[in-house]
Image (cartoon, rainbow, N blue to C red; front, side):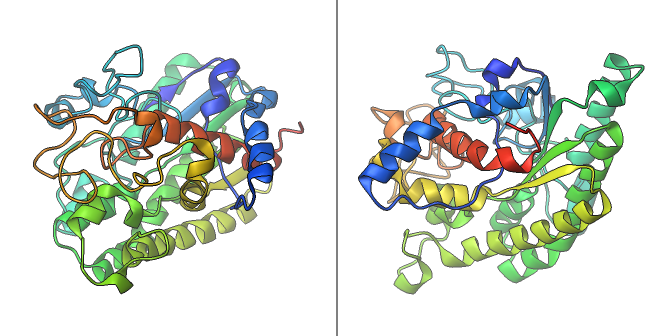
Length: 357
């Protein structure tokens, strides 16, 4: 896991929740984009940000974990090519939305995944392990008066839980089988939130899952000639419906937890609709309309992604301008995509976090 402690001046990249807003006209789009460029979250005066999660937010823990490091391509160039030419373990060409976490992490433990006949060969650092790290950190850093010292902190519990379904899909699990796992995954995440509350957190964001049917790795693996399998964004509908099913269960569980803790600002981070907003408005913010579902770093097929020739492997090319792509390597996003997602998410988060700005 991952603890990240940052100056508020850098916190404009923190993720949060979002309500879907579609930009219909260019003039409206320009007004909205000007608003998004203001780092408004710094007005919340958070003095620390802590996050639990997976490779969407890992800034270098995986390369320090022996099991994870052996399988990690993110520690090689061209990863980090736009981050001071420095391969820090970030699974992107540059910065992420936030944090300091272990790539490939799951909400369920390795043992629980094994019960579902799913093997996580990437890392053993599930949510429970990360929470243990966080507890150890707090005990050593705040031996006294911890609750008061964490009052001005923002906690992000996720995004985590998506890898259970990623691993399951590639092990041949059916969508029906994966849907049956959703309640267990969601309750594991909620238990993690309860633990974070017990640490003293009062403002918490719990992100949902992206529309995985729009991600190049899945578009490649489950490509079909059946045109009815795709939606208006050319994403796979069945996979996106799996994400919606998971997110709906997570939102319901968050709402129930909020009723138990009326003094806690507990916010659902709507990654799903944030990603759709990015697709809908991509051309307004400089993305190439012909590359919205393609990987920048990769080779092969309609989506510029190949399982056997992934980004970071010898001979795998990089696009000329990563800023025109949403997907960096077919799994993770580019720095520019993360930046716009984060800015938009922040704008919706503010009224829900009781920042009084």
